[in-house]
Length: 358
Image 1 (cartoon, rainbow, N blue to C red):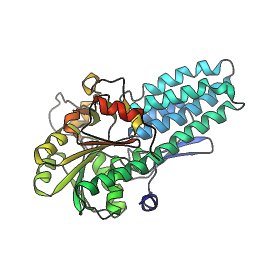
Image 2: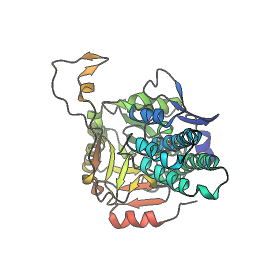
Image 3: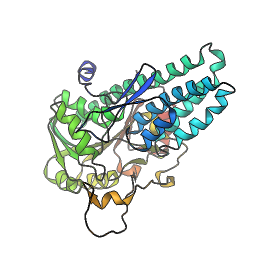
């Protein structure tokens, strides 16, 4: 299966070359494929804030390279450049506080910075660490895809319909994708007849990105309005809802793209299994439950316009970016360290003690 998964890697959103970070601008996909070069941590932080780069894993990888750019600039200024670098760490951390991967990556890069005295070429060591984080995410994607496919095979081996939400493919990771990676793998094994992709309002990540990725690989995909998801579960033979995660709390609650919670409720009502696919770096053991997290809100004005034109009267609009899906609505969480069925605090803690699967 691994060879088929590798052969399916056709899309990437992050490239590090010639000492610069290149990001595929996801704000203009699928109409334009525009790569933007970044040479400073401040610019990468703005790319994260403005959603040039999206998805917790991709944000973390981008931040790792941003630390390299910052270190290079600080070292050129002279003085105690390692201490000065803390300002860049703070700037990057503030770019997307919800993404657990971002905090995890910054801590890993800070730890490597603390051990640079052992290394004769500190900037080279930091760059190697960032590249290792990137490659590790790619390998994690492949492992999660294999584990998720075996779960699908175990519970329903025949061709089936799968529903997904948001964008969890190659565009938001360092490689194959998380939830979309499992779907790709299952399709390559003949276990997926059709994928239903929520359009994912209001950013339309499902219609602009997920449907584009799947259609580009010849995977049968049907785009649907978010509000049609329950009807599709009831009438179209959906057996799995498969989504990613921006953060997973210590008790197994999942923070993800707004609309995920209602999918989990509908899935339980219709007897549809609910799978979350995310790297272990998404797990935040310091967050006891999802209810402790403050959910960010976007400017509600984006709900009041289409194509820049107002829909009607100017009014108040509520536009949260994420929601929290309680652990008791989740059938399984898949990470590169293994699988947790019916997640809870004890199972999450046990998972995080494991070494990575090989």
